[in-house]
Image 1: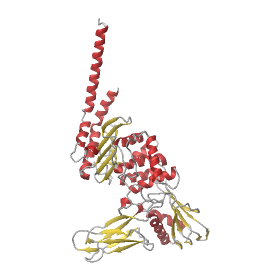
Image 2: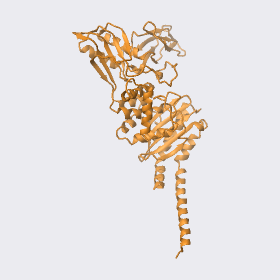
Image 3: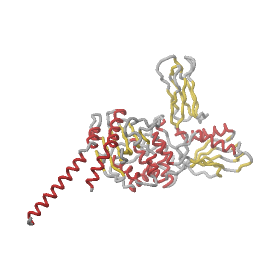
Image 4: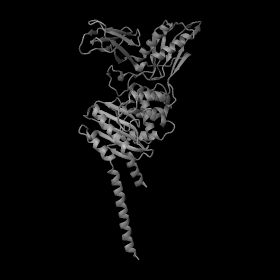
Length: 496
């Protein structure tokens, strides 16, 4: 028989043995292949260790599997769109549709409206020339041939600020840098089509899409026999006598393929209005008056209204093409719908911050300055991103739409070639992000046995270049896919 003292010693030894075995099991977790594989990927010489972060969590538990600088505030670039997407679904719902309303003042007499035509913009980020043609055709089909008054744009849905306040005042003419507006068209860009002539020395063929008298094309580019393509396009920064001039210069070798240059528009609301006016006239509806823009509500009798696709489909396109314009339009729409018009970035960002709190996201170090991630004043952590991904994964009401909004990496789609040769192809949902010396990736990945992980990887101040940075991120995602099952099993056994 053991006396009390011996029994106590044995008990202590047994407890220490259990602790040792537990630590050994935990060491087995820490020493499993996933963790050193991720560590090794993040030890690349082209990375800045102090500005590199990663977070991996298992779902649906949200248990942290890997963490490296996960609370370090860094630039997320376009991964920021993950948060805008989640907040939009939360506040607006997957079935939300943007509404563009067409009204008129005065009275209709036969085929003539004795008054103004009003377009009330509703922030729709996907209005296109094709839709304008459909709307104009419907107005014509209703029997209207003339409008004696003005074309008035009611733009009160948004404030008058046409960019995120945190962006630099001087912007480029690139399509990704497009301005915002309650009434917008073609992502507030215009396409310049360029083809070489059949004869060397002649000017190249050029045309605009859409073609509108509001924008005048000035072409001095020449067709050459051989040599480097130097053709470029540039629009005048301001209107002159109610028009914008777009210049095409340089040279294009004979036999070259058609080239398309997309530029943003300096005054997007006027561009949309003038384009619609021109389309109306081409369908046979004459507007006698001028084009005017009002930031105050304008009343009228409803003539026609256009509804966008559901928000869930728009968000899919936003993330597939990483469209900055769409993200900022949606952020201001959240503000307009939930706080009131005019929708502003200030109110939209406050609502996003409230959403993060409601979603139990660790917002330590987080600072949001826009909805797209284009601003370098943004600060985000990988843990905040995986917290959002974890929260959305568990939401039946909007979670499926959120996951669908992310690109399927490595699938057969035109923009899904990255990771196409990965064993995880088709099992990865992701949002990419890129700025100068910044590469980011975040989303979900499933293992062969159906375990799902959320991950976020930020490579700030890296000297890798885009291709090498992508390979580092891909290596981590592949490691999660291939090695995640074992890590989860060990972690679960420890918890028990």
